[in-house]
Length: 113
Image (tube, rainbow, N blue to C red; front, side, top):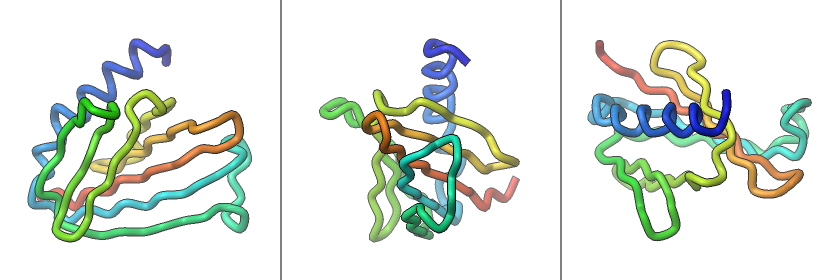
């Protein structure tokens, strides 16, 4: 997927994410140094669960955000190098922060439809 297609896919996701408002949402976040050979033992993982209440784009800083009670999560729009749909209501974003540092964000929505 070229950069223009990626940007269109990202924008479509965030334009449509409001359909998940009120859904239990799971974010699994991992920091990796080799995106092509992910070793779970060498990756730092975090897991958060919340009910999604709001999403927005923050122009200052160029960030996409997701919010729930007690949780605020941002992704740097210009750092996103990949967005994949892993299954129904499951998505994976990859951000590249430097030549050897990547953040993987997996979103899983328990959507009723």
